[in-house]
Image (tube, rainbow, N blue to C red):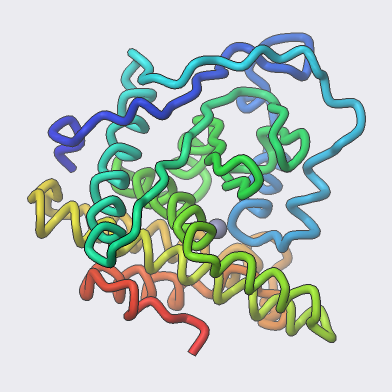
Length: 283
Ligand SMILES: [Zn+2]
């Protein structure tokens, strides 16, 4: 992807190296295999319960000065700023076209751990979106895991992850997140709640596809192989793929993000159509 040709977001908050867990160092690289699997479970497979178990309200260090939003200078920080910037271009236009205003989310880069409006998060939580402060949180160590553990190579695999999290922000702005969470609360069984979660996640994948559509058709930023990179990533992080790896078998009722094939299918639907209406995973 020709990502340097995109608008550079000024909405990055860079907390890297300010780890608030004490002790310094870069915990991501010391996680070991169990930690790596856990990190990916939380983001791609874990339901709200599992993700929340990686957050803790207690014992979180409070001495964390906020940093001003801007754009980092280093290569990987630049990449994130440009992808986020291009999602801003995409969604600002889509919202404006329907007479609405897009509120740009901030994206916090962190290492080790971070206080958020959703609680204290460790890197093991994986990339996530916190609706309470409208921020995407990413420890870039996750991108390394994506390549090494999940064989999801290439810049577009990483861009898909960012665009997926931004998709959750769009769901929040559109009021979809609130409605779904209410439905989840009223669900009678865990399997039923999980089905809502899957639809949310697949819609975020579809919204990521809408971003890819816009980057491609309006700005010609994609290079050959980019869509395949995203589709490979979507497949390798499907619930079935990960469950097979982690527990050796597949239990469809416990899916919270959708199978690899479903995730590919919805990303592609967004990419082919470029239309929010086409992303109604709740129908
Ligand atoms: Zn998600």
